[in-house]
Length: 261
Image (cartoon, rainbow, N blue to C red; front, side, top):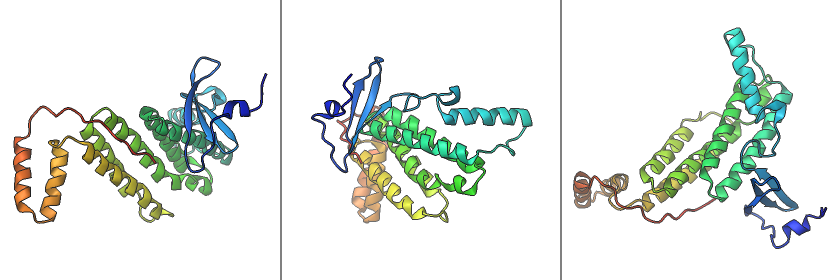
């Protein structure tokens, strides 16, 4: 058996600052994700836990602890005494990192359904630790990552809809992401970190509007708001007429161009 990684990495150079990802077929016949890092390569499963493990007989540790919580609530009638130990939280943080590696790779591969799945799952994990960790430090350890995960969740949903030409749904997903970030408590430590995530989603919103057909109602409404802000009332009147007279059948979707972070 050849064990030297150079046989795998030949012709695939590491580029600092760039996420380089590819898909392969593993020896088990299933698709895998490989991500190039400076000293080698990470290999991740497409579904289930990214490292292929089944901790405590479950798909993930999160699934295991969520089942524990359900059983506790059914037995006791409440969740007041349910706790996650420091060791539980440490293991869950490691698991969250595995899923983080995968959803970044899936985003580069434009596998947006997987991005939505894995980010939604990590948000559940953050909620679980914040509510049930026994130690205060563990309750807040993942909180500063929430805004970033929320942003990636919104991007996954929006880009998936945009790819399929569902422009209005893509815009709604971006707007929901912005509203969710705006709703985060402002007195949290590191709350200024939300600015970067909000900037990304607002940029995505502009990109979606740009990609929309010219007669799409959200695009016309955005242009109307701009015309009113600039006191261009003649253009505003034209846009109102276009909104009132717009066809009931949407125009054919235009080719989609996406930017990635």
